[in-house]
Length: 65
Image 1 (tube, rainbow, N blue to C red):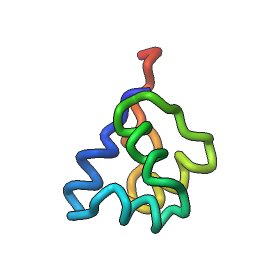
Image 2 (spheres, rainbow, N blue to C red):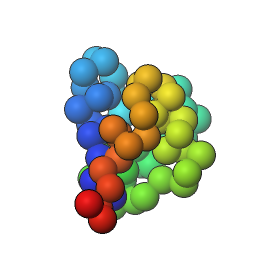
Image 3 (cartoon, rainbow, N blue to C red):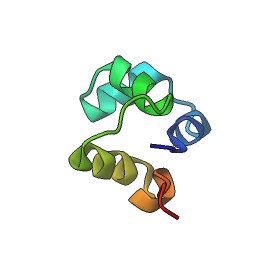
Image 4 (tube, rainbow, N blue to C red):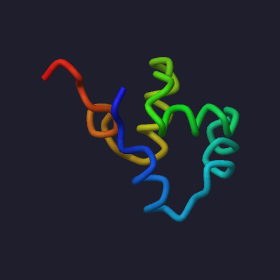
């Protein structure tokens, strides 16, 4: 699923390990989401959006539009 996680993360000056630790997931999970190789669960998607203070729809792009 296309997303702007990498841009948001870098905009905050975070590395992948810092973000993973803050969200209690593995660094590999963050890497896979940023590379569009892994679609996060709905709870994780909401945690990511809440962490960055954006709506889920702004973080993850609807592929059906």
